[in-house]
Image (cartoon, rainbow over all chains, first blue to last red; front, side, top):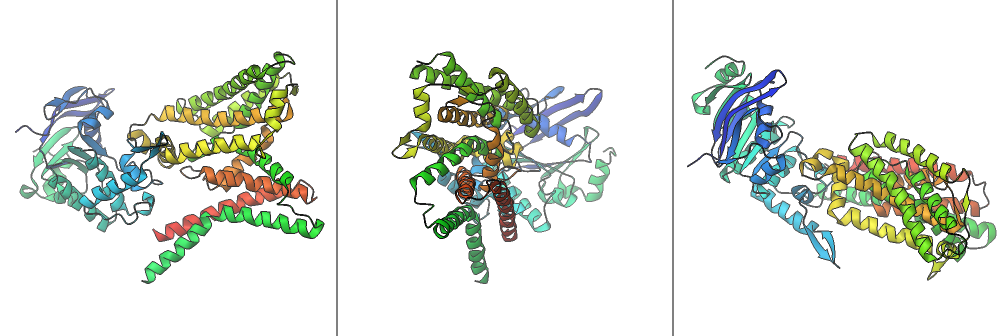
Length: 246
Length: 335
């Protein structure tokens, strides 16, 4: 079986500065790979090359042997890679249904005119959220009235609803309290159970060990090492993040 | 149990606060009615002339405020509407005058199209400045406010362009089933804007843009195009205001929209919009415009010095903001 995602020899140069020198890894269906690394290690640059925001100077990204490099962010998204940013990109004043469908809203014709189909969109949002184990308190209320964990769930629901095969999450627990961090960890496990591949960016060690099937440590633009959580410990990961060699 | 009761309590207060502008409108109508009964023994509310006068004043405000509501919901502002309106008014009058005294309805139609196009041009420039050059809308539209004002005055030769045309005069001063045409025009446009904002994908994107521009951008919406369309809508409804002015008074005036600008902005905010965007409705703006019109006409009717209207409208704006803030506090407390 071929891997879900193959990242092959990515390199990115900004002017004279080589932010990413050589990054290669693979990811399987239902697997969660954590990209760990200090600030400036190249984590964000790598995921931006995967999601199509940056074009690599060298190397390429394949989703199920389909070459994604060279495509626009929209094309990468419709191929099945969804990125969830730290700020979640939610519209706080709209209900969960409209957030789920933002940019692809459903309409019904009435008297020949298209009207937003709020009811169907709300029901769909409640359904997808339920499959993630989250009960939406009031489907008609704007999402600003929801908790941090619930809001994260909406962003994840959006990925699931649009049949993402791979979800990239950038520091999903950074702005959350402890109970909500646990909620997000539970969401990641449910996503994996659905066969979705996950790339998680984090430098929070407890999160890394709770979520990862494999940990890939980046330091100064190269892969400093790759470990399974069971065969390593905090100390070793930190040492690799600081740039010690294997 | 207690929690449920409390939620019911807050949601009651919340719906009361949401309806405050309706209540306020009813309150000031009641005030002027009682005043009129006591002072003159006559009715204020139940005279067709009074109602029509209020309706026409409200329509003038509304025509500038409708498109502006969409712009404000998206988190921007459009000051140039004062002179998109004035420019359209002058262009229409000039075209009709150029065609001579016997100009038929075809000329009036042509003039209307030319006037609206001139307003739309201002909207395109606004949208381009904001979307492509990232100029803050307050500054950008303050710039086009000046440019459109100057151009309108230059082509009008610095004077009011009076016209003699029976079609135009009838369009501005007749009634349909007792409703003044300016009111009918404003209401039809209000209905269209309400539909666009509340029921279309474009409207949903407008709200999202006001709350978090990144959400719309990452959803794959062409934000630049969206902004340009918003400013063109705003300029066009203002242009309709200029059109109605020219037809009502048989004159094109560059300054016709200027005294209405701040009332239009006020109507949008009284209607529940927020300066930071993401909030506001057309229904709210309609009520806001009527509140201002009732105050204006009511004070004149009561024989008070007309200057009191500035004081009264100013106070209403402040009340509107205070109500809005307390609403946020209640919702915030709940969450």
